[in-house]
Image (cartoon, rainbow, N blue to C red; front, top):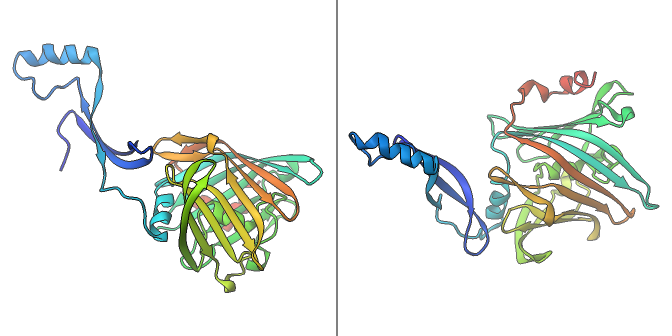
Length: 309
């Protein structure tokens, strides 16, 4: 049903009485065109309304009957619903600290795009420091298996495929591995996921989701436990366990720096800690453009090399 003239409808989210963010439909009414005003009175009434307020929100109501997700799939959908609909461009800072406290930094841009087949592609391109300028990683999502990953280093002047065996290696000197980055951008392909008991992180209620990678996938991890904020659907904590159930990596999001961008919640600062090596990398989102126009040709191995020139 089309909205009446002077009205518009859009999707959004609203905070319910229990403090959680819920999906909703917002219907806006153009107060400059009151539908009940007719004849010679319409013009005068419309003028008075337009002097008061140009638009008012007429209705805010849930898009569907809302309930907490009861299954692992429902929790995953919660996280998925907090992703951009089409694309995003992020300007980010990687700030790495070694075990003696020395800090190095690098700037990069992350392009993410969802394609017509429902699968996404990601291009990470470094812009600073000078010796890393042009270096990049391309991820191409697959169904049922890990993404195809390619990397480019200017000094090598060639694009190389990152094998599953190499996915545990460092992503350009940071504490993120290639596999960690896959998970960060939503390309995990765990063989199974199950829901564990809810708990709290930083005083916030969270869902707990346990993922178990396929042993044949080449994953460095035996299980990955994500603690997902019930209000924003942002993972606040992710624990990655190696063989022998040893906690190796810990990714946390600063809950005080989760900000609203349109209808989405964005964690502006996350920290990856390597508990074995006693190092850490802060990932700071300095700028984000949601549903930006990105040409599909950018996401190819050829452009990964050509775009660095």
